[in-house]
Length: 345
Ligand code: SP5
Ligand code: ZN
Picture: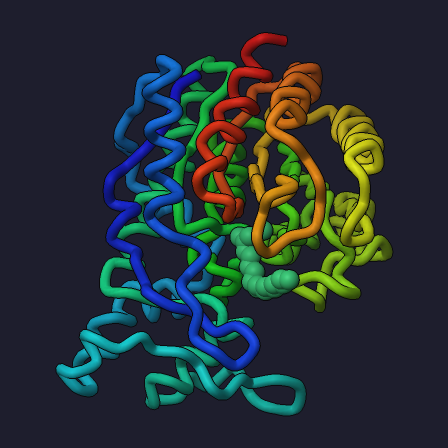
């Protein structure tokens, strides 16, 4: 399977995030991609540098003012004080209900809050470059499908599925899966399905396509009543306007057994089959793994092969985009198991 990988991912390397009022080391680290890279190479998969420029597709997925903010964010932060080069910016105020989000403040931290859903998406010097490399991989992958490839894997980080049209969140900045789906549409595919198997609901992807019938969004995830991102991902969210009926959420209680997860996957695949999609984008989060430090499903390494096999049976040209998965040392094995399960079937 063609696999896109860029060393530019490592330019995004914040040191810490907040957890229960304390600074803790980031869960989403450059080492994650290193483990995926070495497992791909060890098992004979060649890596390709993304060659596409995603700017045109990014403008269809994200707002112009969010893209402008993100691209300049680190430079603006350091311009406030040269000492900021050694500090991580975090938002501390957000335009929640009754507050205005149409006027962009001048203040940097206020702008950061405007464009964030949480304080859990730390920025670093190379965040834009790394995220852009991920989006470039997503567009490159879509072009491969356009050229007749059966499947492509984007081994990218930071992840993307929590990022909405005009906000970052949950370690995500640019929504690579949405970029892949939109780029596949630009390739002439009339109908696309996005299947999100990350432990966390893909709120960003859902919101980007919520009013559209051409991109079906299906997600399997921990119940948002107890699990991040908390404020989206319920079963009664089915789409709006022309998009009514084109969103399917399958929340499962934290701690659900593997059999329940695969039963939900079967429902997800049945819905995708009915969409008569021309292509599939998989938001491949691997934080459903039993050993994941921040999640509560129970998949084992072999279950990821089984996932790959089930996805292959949909018979669709497929782009895999890496999302979460924080048991870093096992991430490579689990990711490549999906890829090889897909190829075997
Ligand atoms: C892409 C992705 O997987 N993003 C996940 C972002 C999760 N951020 C919130 C983390 C909250 C951690 N809760 C830990 C509970 C451990 N018992
Ligand atoms: Zn996740």
